[in-house]
Image 1 (tube, rainbow, N blue to C red):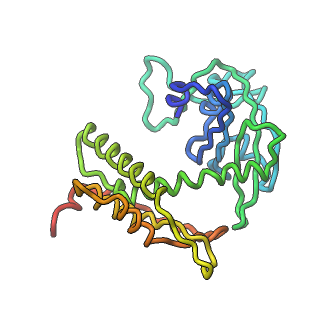
Image 2: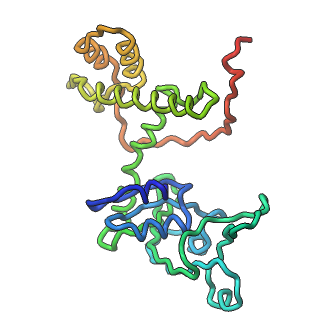
Image 3: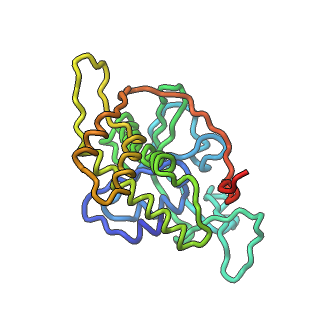
Length: 268
């Protein structure tokens, strides 16, 4: 993410929204320095949270946090309450059991960001770190973060409908080829689906959209035929729809999954 941030210029005002897993003092420092960029980052709660965030009470809140990051452990650093980051030293072989962090800035280094904690409909809390100004309320920040849900559904379609959940290659170049092939097919199907016209019926209670799983299957069949009928493809896609049920939430059924090895392709 830091590489992407440094590789791009943002001529227009841009908001970068990130899920958990990207939180870190080094990441936040990079985001704060990038011109024309604001960020909205969900961070962990409880024991796994960043030190200053973990100290906050578990309740809806909207506050600013100010801290100083240091890579040294002098007596003065401890007295001032600086946050110590253990970073790899040059020409020194680190113990693999020692937890180290990346830090690309001087030491000590001041940080200041806004923390917003909101309650979800499930009764659980969601903690967000942002650089957005106070003119953006906590409820608006909650809606902004929720707007990234389309990215989650896109990854789900890319993995399961397109088939990128399993890789079939061993070499690095072949793996990249599989990823680019899957993304190309996903973009192809997404563009085709936009052209499908769904007829609205007066008896329908919900709004209906294209069933992406069937649409991807039909687009694949069309792609394999040298002289496919595009108009017929759009008509076929429009036949397979599913209702949109807003504000619907199901409990997440998280199950640990291991990486499927190449033996899954071998017949029993």
